[in-house]
Length: 155
Image (cartoon, rainbow, N blue to C red):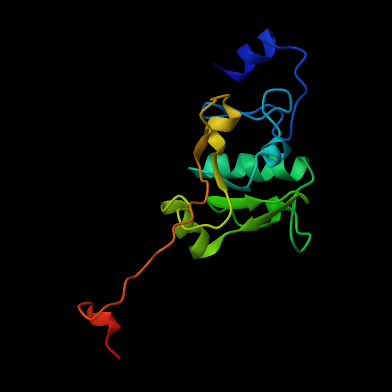
């Protein structure tokens, strides 16, 4: 749907930071998109996956509009975009680095706390399956039996 056609059909829409500009199939408007802050109600550490540059820019702009900053107070749009961020209840966003990227690839299988991975493109488009995988820590006890037949029992 083109921007003009959309504006004609929805004249009461409050314009957001992109003045409801169309970026691919994604729209940025405060009334159309769910707030990032709503993701903080999920139980666990929330990580946001941003699949492409367009979604990265939309996320950073929305985060700034909602009052999110980096831990040092820098506004989200003042930094280079990345594909994964962690959002915290105090409205800070964090880069995750290579460790966070590894955790994303393994879906947090070795995390001691629940890790929630959100596909932001799906989230802003209203797809109810925006949680990539909700990780619940599984504690396994490893019992090693040491006896004379086991090579690790020899000292």
